[in-house]
Length: 86
Image (cartoon, rainbow, N blue to C red; front, side):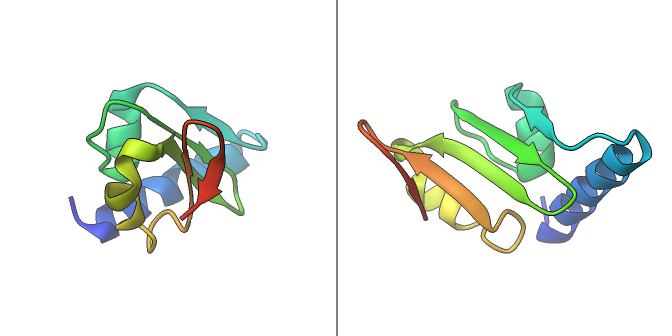
């Protein structure tokens, strides 16, 4: 999946949020997370707001999640005892 298609998909989610006057969308189903982000791991979620895109996962996916900075600039990876931005 190209970065452009991930951006376009997230942009369409933002448009739908605005049309429905919603503040945010929490995506937890891994099929939908993959559709929006391209993430292929076994633990991830994302939050989309009109102003921010946040991807969440655990420490096992630090390198994979870090490669999406252009599409999902706010990425947090939780370790065994904390959550850290990457």
